Image (tube, rainbow, N blue to C red; front, side, top):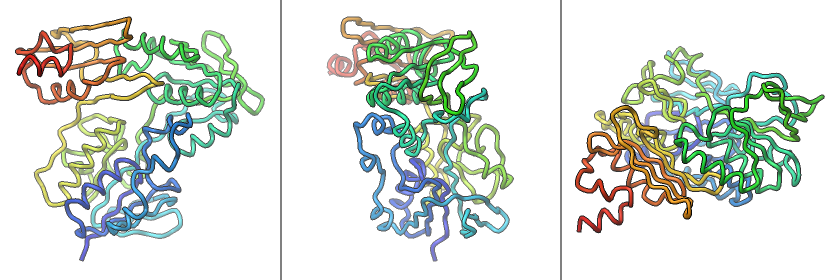
Length: 405
């Protein structure tokens, strides 16, 4: 008889896990997916494209209903899990139903962080995290309306791009001294800022929000330096926080995320965690690729490979932000003892920075031309010596391979 396996969370991590598990051990488990959102799992990376009208909602669905049926998976979307009882191994849903499990996988993702300032409860103040948020923003946005995006990280810039494409007048407020400070160095961030401003988006750096003002609906964002930015709509995109409430109430070990070991096991027998909700070796990644890597390792373990282990991820960003290609991985700034090779072509609006330590590539930042990003990522992950082709490295894979032939 198949073991009952319950997955709480119906997002990208959960989908990859089920795909990997059923490809390795179809029929070994009776799998049930519990998802709070009232829809099939979809690609969150493309939310800004949906907002911008470049992609239809149906186009970002990860797997069709028939795909799940063919693998014998029960998908309970639109159902919230409200409690876990590790003693009797049951999950309780909001409608009162309970699901037994032999194995439980938590893929509960994350929640958007909300500002701790007055006015966050005003109408017209929204977050940008899921398709529900996209619908709310679409309803509130209109051509010519003034939109303020608080947060100049990846999510905030994606929201700004989508709003601009929808016809809104957009201002981005960012607390730090450069955009995407976690993914880009100062030079690449400055180039990105100029590119975004050329699209008609105003960018204010080192802008700290003091309050959101309005009699019932937001009308302005007040900054700590006493400036006031008019706003018909405010989108708060200042980051995410691991969704750990369910795990904490069940008595699992929780820090910033649900603490897991190299086998993605939590502190409670039979319960695992993957994706944005998981904390591995003190790190919550909050990115798709580490979530996929964790999902694959856990699928291998639950399919019978007890040696499968997750060592952690080299974080990489390879995306189009506001219509501009950017890539980064590893050490972006250059720790003591490293060297940097920089290639900057203002005419082509491209920039490359490679960080080297002990004849190994340990970091890369690319702006504009990101074609070789994944090749650089492979070099970083493998730790191979670049001594023989160091002189050609910054010019890309094609030249290195041509010179080696």
